[in-house]
Length: 453
Image (cartoon, rainbow, N blue to C red; front, top):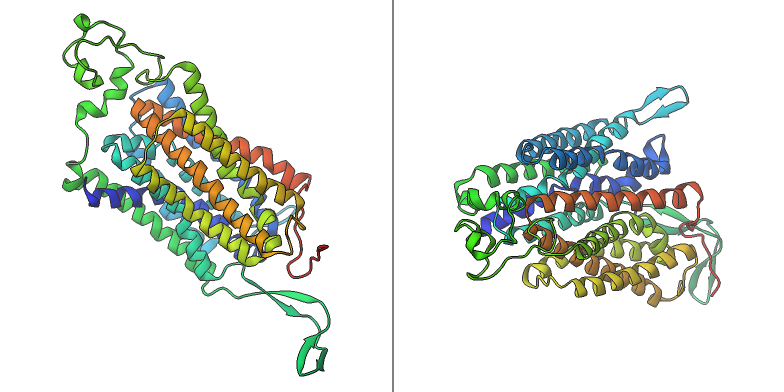
């Protein structure tokens, strides 16, 4: 295995969702300078779902014109669009245009849509491209995909986004027994950012350039070419679906036997018409339902209530939960690299476990601004640990499903990306009315919310 190729696969994976993840973590800094204000997250949710037109087109092409669409030109196009869009965003994000009903951030919303198309389409193009490399590099790609959330979060942490300090509102002070005490309410004072939103968006543009460079090297560098599978191996998944592998040994050709890697003298039986036929129909339904479920939870449902579940415990708890849960994603991928257990039973156990921790997070969000143990350090510690375990378990499930479907061939990875986007879309559409329309979740005011002990 080439360390150079692993690094390139990781950098390639970082570019998959770094732009949109960066938009989300930068929201606290930009919402005060745009007409939409805190309605922007709701707009972004709808924009991202509209961008699923990209993966829908790719999936339909693979379904009705298999073998016609080559992922490489598509990847070159979308990553280049990502580079240009983030670069324009750095200079135009606060530009407003006046429509009939007032001012709107036309440039920000339009460029966010382009970036959403880029990132959503990466789910159904980046994964199938990884079929051209040896299997071990797929897990490295997933590590990079996890870092696409961690890297912008760490940069935003360095930037000082959303850091608030509580200061006394009155100037009245009482000096008694040598102690200084203040009377009056506390007010929230937001710490100025260490660098501007323009600098952050330029950083995102550089990350997209790095992704483009990594993809160029994965395609063209001679050292990486040695890590590519042979032409026959690349086409395995396309040819295997056309082969009747329920034949006996007498009717098998020598070309089919080594390709399918079955011992001589065995009778090959397909359990379904999907991929290589390793799993029967019920198992496939289970795998894809779990894939949609975990992506709905990790990409849409729980992130939409993260602030409600964490901020009542303090700004530090919120930042720790956001940062450490972002760390948990690549850690889960790293674990999967060395412990790639493909057991469907383990997958079910981990999914139930992660869902249980997600239920606790949702319950604390529903109880906001006064969740359980609000006045104890244990409450803050529990919510941070819960977020980490939630992301860790379900991220491992996602990687293992990716490894399973990778073994089933090229078309299986296309469907993997499509189901990832479908699950995320259903999760986002289900949470949007609950959070933004009906207002079922209530946030406390920084430094002012008082809960009963």
